[in-house]
Image (cartoon, rainbow, N blue to C red; front, side, top):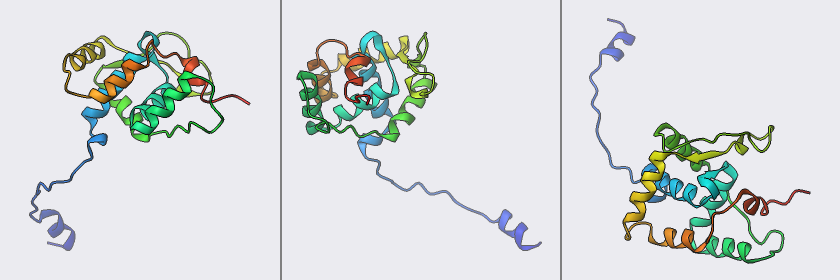
Length: 165
């Protein structure tokens, strides 16, 4: 038996080792936030840009305050700096695979920006939102913030954060 065969025939054991994953990165939490964000958007439809802005806004007290100031009136350029989260894309992929969201009917706002393709909350996602809203003791701060935003957020509202030159 040569060295390669010995290596392939060697016994090995898998050991489960605890690896802490921060709660903010856990897929179930991310997907739950995602459907709540879709629920806040006008017509339960959103683009990736809208999702990124809302995802940024919901993350902490400072971001929530900045976003609220933006919604209340004119702001100075650079007063609100949105940080995009690459893990949001993964949450969107999971939600699409689980049929919680789906591509929205219609055209993208821009043919040269794939992220402009709108997505919408599917029936299964709406049912998940209803279940999440039924429990008053989960995502309390996040739900209060989203409810404080009042009406449904539109693309134009979010686009105002990114003025075109």
